[in-house]
Amino acid sequence: MDAAKLNELKKFIQLCKSSPSILDDPSLSFFRDYLQSLGAKIPSSADTAADSKSKSYVVEESDEELADAGVKINIEEEEEEDEIIESDIELEGDTVEPDNEPPQKMGDPSVEVTDDNRDASHSAKAKAMDAISEGKFEEAIENLTQAILLNPTSAIMYGTRASVYIKMKKPNAAIRDANAALEINPDSAKGYKSRGIARAMLGQWEDAAKDLHMASKLDYDEEIKNWLKKVEPNAHRIEEHRRKYDRLHKEREDRKIERERRRRRAQAQAEYEKAKKQEQSSSSRKPGGMPGGFPGGMPGGFPGGMPGGMPGGMPGGMPGGMPGGMPGGMPGGMPGGMPGNVDFSKILSDPELMAAFSDPEVMAALQDVMKNPANLAKHQANPKVAPVIAKMMSKFAGPK
Image (tube, rainbow, N blue to C red; front, side, top):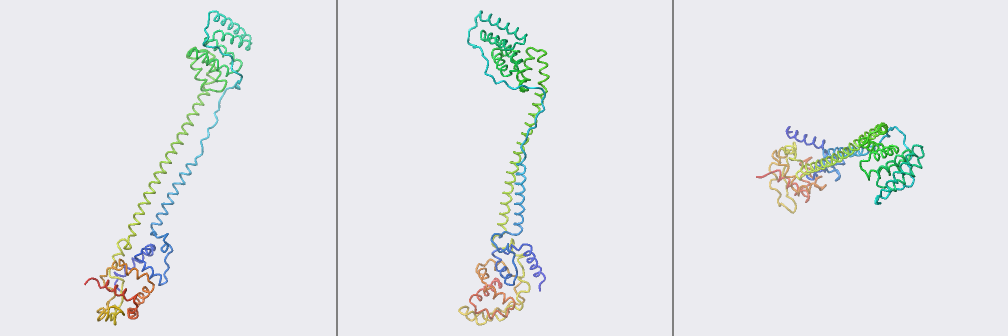
């Protein structure tokens, strides 16, 4: 037996063992049927259309799918990132409950203020100041309200009443008067001071700090300084807290954007790899069997061939055809088996032969002849088998 031929067959058998799915190739169906006729068990993946891909490709695709799944899982885990829960801020200083009483009387800025009204307004204010010094805040409010109605264009009157509301711990009323004072005079130090203190009483630390700083620039005094000592630490803590969580929220949003970018990139890469593998698989599964055919084109045919050839040709011919048979048979038979220069691809590419190989009766006859060439005679009368054998012989004979 030719060692080279045997080596080629060994290589092919090893390839079948490592990748049984190559037997799914339609051009090798005759070989698969032959193996099954001998009792061979073909892996189910090679017999089902669902697993018609090559084994290596299935494994690679599975790995790809797992990789894709991993990307999705990671992204989902990242997307499940806990919401940012802001911690409480430790603030110092006391606050008061907001006053929800009906708004106090305000002056009509469109009223024309006469000299008499102005003088009467100053008199009412003087009475209010006396009441304040005696701790009579309600009386002071009544006098200041009278002064405001007489002269609604005076920012000082509103600022003074606002300071009394602060003493009465009515910050909302104080803020309304302070706003009125600042509308009349945007540079009213008393308006900023009163509003800053009222906001501090309500725990509006940052706004309070802004108003008190503005008041200190316009007319600095010790009361403003003392209130700033209470307000500024809390305002700084709130500002730092806000900056911290603004940064955390921005970082979280940036991570979300980055996750989405990676997800799209991974999806695009997976689609590219899948298309690339499908293209490679499609190229490797074109008609003609394995890329490049059997290793080396299986030069020399099947090792050992058909010992002694097919002696005697086909005596008597084929009934109904080829009268007289092939005179003298196939001269000398095929000594030593199939010729060494047989191009096996000629058989694989012949649709008639491939169709015949799918017929169990034909395959059984060919196997019988392969086992013992002398059995040819008993099959030459079979109209299915004889033409196939004759065509195969013509392929083996090659061009003359």
